[in-house]
Amino acid sequence: MKALIFAAGLGERMRPLTNHTPKPLLHAGGKALIEWHLEKLAGIGIREVVINTSWLATQFPQTLGDGARWDVSIRYSYEGETPLETGGGMLHALPLVGEAPFVLVNGDVWTDYDFARLPHEPAGLAHLVMVDRPPQATQGDFALDDDGRVRSEGGNRLTYAGIGVYRPQLLDGWRSRTTDAGADESPPRFRLAPILRAHMAQDLITGEHHRGRWTDVGTPERLAGLERELAGVA
Image (cartoon, rainbow, N blue to C red; front, side):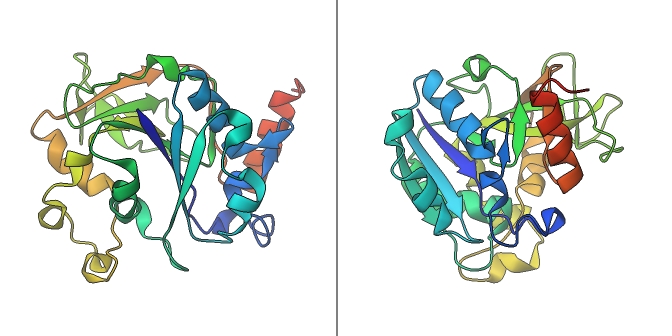
């Protein structure tokens, strides 16, 4: 099983910290955010990791190298100067990811979620880890049914944690499931959420509710809060 780490974002809300450092390479708890993921992925036996890059892309191989220090092999999927969004980024990386289900992790989150809980074979096209809505996401992303199916709408709305297992077939026929203007660019640039919502209507997206620690490290204030938390400071 391989893994894909999303690390191509511009990190605009994190500036000035991201003026010279990509967000996933910012440090918390003594290591870069992306290093926490590499350790977890290696810990569950994943040996091949693809990292998509765009903003300050050269810093990733300079900092992480080929992954040998985590006992993984890292390959980089460079998207150009403009990130391809989540859907476009996944599509662009598929030649490196291959045809089997893979773990997907957002490079700018931190969590105590146990990656060993992730299914090797999702029941449908994707299995999403969901968390309680943080203060900055009052509406939530999707709803989670009692039977573990993820829905576009519903009462129990949660936030997607940026962690999941995906089948590459999720993107089959993706053009018919997006209205993003960038879809007509070359390479195409489009969001993943509309693709997921389209498949939710067919009961093809499952999920689980993680009730532990999770942080979307989207602003300098949240990064500072995570640093205090990891240092054991209230």
